[in-house]
Amino acid sequence: MTDKLNQIGLDNRASKELSDKLNELLANYQIFYMNARGFHWNIKGEKFFELHVKFEDLYNDSLEKIDEIAERILTLGFTPLHNYEDYSGISKIKASKNVSGGKDAVQAILDGYKVLLPLERELLEMAGESNDEGTGALMSDYIREQEKLVWMYSAFLNK
Image 1 (cartoon, rainbow, N blue to C red):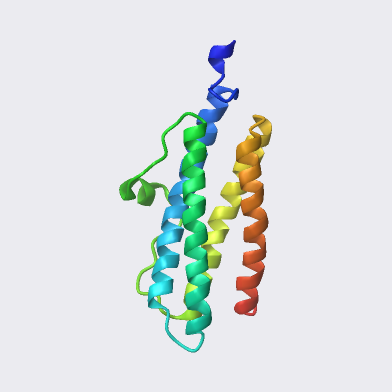
Image 2: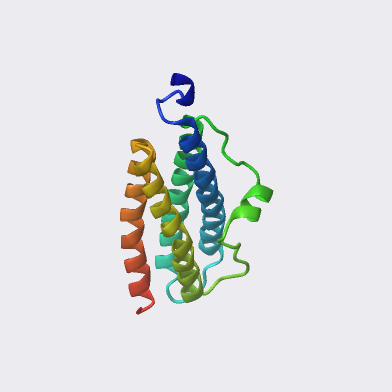
């Protein structure tokens, strides 16, 4: 019976399914990160100072989450994706190009959360079904943080 469990005592099959979904989340985060970094570099206009700092906070936070997601995949006993070709092929978030307007950049961030949040909720549910507290806790934290960010970025756009 123990051969059906991975090194942390979770079902191998469920861990593989979670790892595959985590890799999908990882790919989306990598593109989200690159977009936020580009917005930070290229932002122009009246809200430059405010948004320049916000986008830096966002890409730094995304970079931390990327590392956490990859390490969770490794903890489950699998390999995180680690090249741009894989990321761009899987990600539902598309790379932004030549975005320098504040409202366009913030809308792109909100569009990214429309992809990330459902993936995280799906992972939270999958983690609960397989008693994977580690993945569940991670997703719960991300969801809570990002729901607040969606509210704040939406308020910036008067939505």
